[in-house]
Amino acid sequence: MSSQHAVIIGGSSGIGLATAAHLLEKGYRVTITGRDEAKLRAAQNLSGDVATIVMDAADVTGLAGIFQTIGPFDHLVLALGGGNGGGPFATVDLADLKKGFEQKTMAHFACAQACLPYLSKEGSITFVSAVSAQAALPGTAGLAAVNAAIAALAPVLAVELKPIRVNCVSPGVVDTPWWDFLGEEQKAPAFAGFAARTPVGRVGRPREIAEAIAFLISNGFTSGHTLICDGGIRLGQ
Ligand SMILES: NC(=O)c1ccc[n+]([C@@H]2O[C@H](COP(=O)([O-])OP(=O)(O)OC[C@H]3O[C@@H](n4cnc5c(N)ncnc54)[C@H](OP(=O)(O)O)[C@@H]3O)[C@@H](O)[C@H]2O)c1
Image 1: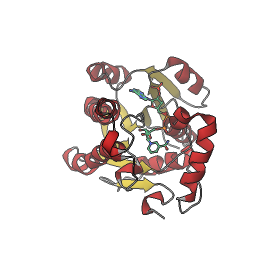
Image 2 (image 1 turned 120 degrees about the vertical axis):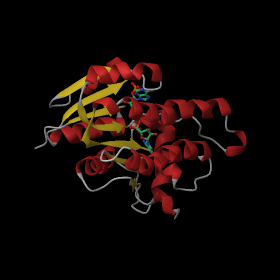
Image 3 (image 1 turned 90 degrees about the vertical axis):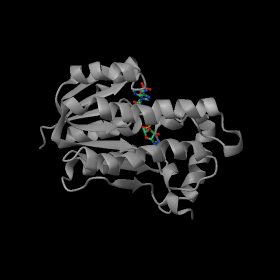
Image 4 (image 1 turned 90 degrees about the horizontal axis):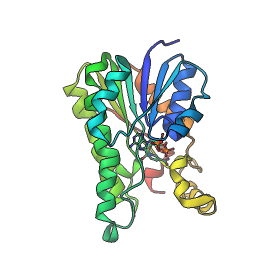
């Protein structure tokens, strides 16, 4: 069992919440953060050594104080991000795309920077990007740009921040509240369409991405890597 401390930014829902549950099962101490206090309270049902902090990672000026409050820790997981910047390239709303960069790329970048005084040199940073960065999916140019910028950080930081290990997970379509904007009626056919284009024949489960993140955290010889966990949808069947 591990007694290491993992901080999950965006840990109150979906992939981050599943990662918290998985790491707690493995004996990690876990701190989860998010903007919505009610969501964080609900996540406290997790069993194990879990703490919660309300914070907006896109409010980059507040991050130094947040990490000072958290204190020394071992692993940073960046699982936050919304869906701003999606849509057909010709008509994508540029203000929405800018928000996408602010809410995901900048927030990931700034959290990784602000945590450094407190992050163990034997520890790790794991970014959660998205397979839009690797797959050529029409309608995802903005999301691809937002997420490819994050994936680009892993190899650079793996060298610049050595011996801290820096990796990235690139999920395919995963059934999380991220998709709630579709509403229940649209979600089922959308997932059926994604499943048909995915070699494993279904969308992903948050737990499967959590397992990929846990591997990158715990494997001491993996750094600068992007682990694509997408059921093969990037292959464009
Ligand atoms: N689900 C998918 O199919 C999929 C596929 C590829 C990549 N991803 C990526 O995986 C990551 C996690 O997505 P998910 O599916 O788990 O979504 P989710 O269920 O909506 O969870 C997002 C988490 O991030 C938090 N969050 C969002 N903005 C934040 C901010 N500014 N500051 C602090 N916390 C913030 C949310 O809590 P609050 O709202 O309370 O802040 C929540 O805990 C995202 O970056 C997403 O782009 C998801």
